[in-house]
Length: 365
Image (cartoon, rainbow, N blue to C red; front, side):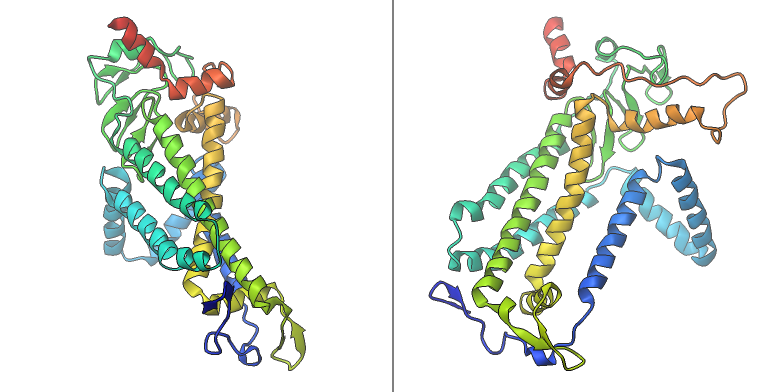
């Protein structure tokens, strides 16, 4: 396919433009991506926005009349196992997807880019990011997030101030029978109380708390960077291929018999027919880069203001105590939530990457 540093498409691989109808697969593919993104957003924020939560509940009720009861029970058991018990399903799925993406990158893109004389530093960057990402992924999986026990209960009680709104003083965990330090939460999946609890992540099969938030953020950052780097390399390869083969200068006959200049839709269709796996890979890593990038920005924003995902969610419920649709006892007065743990950007980041409990442990020793 390639010779003398310039790609030459064979007659077999070059599609006859006169026989190619102007397909709308690109529009359908973009519509599919939009639906996936919409579903992802609804799942992520549906539980936070009460109107969306009501819509989701009503949709579940409608489906309950359509789906047989035995199938509903089976689905509930599977969902309970996947999302409410500790298991390695998503860890294995994560590694399989990562392996498939890098196998395709190595098998096709790396070799073709070498023939196009891409810089080796440029081509090896995704592998370097992969190694760093796997290190932080492992640390996120195996590091204790900050489990509260009888031995360290008093230590954790001294770390954060109680705000008496989201974290009242002298509250005990009914499951662990421990006094709950400020910013802690009992994880029903791991069955333990976690200090500075952020969330339980099924992809690392572990809670994200005071002691492993730094590893989780680094894992998320390197995963986003690796996906974005691979998307850039693959896209540049396809663009250079189109430019060097002069496909964009050609014309074709449309379904009505009119001569048309090659446009973006036709180029994407042509590349899809010529390199289907590479185009699918580009689409996957581009969408993944946007999703991971959006979530990374959200996590960095919470880190900058020293707030956890759990506090962000509970803060919305505290704010919604002022909303008319939120039921509360007549004598109860709404209390506004205020983040009292933010002490400036650098202090907030230092608290994540140098957890406060470490200083108390050194004093104790």
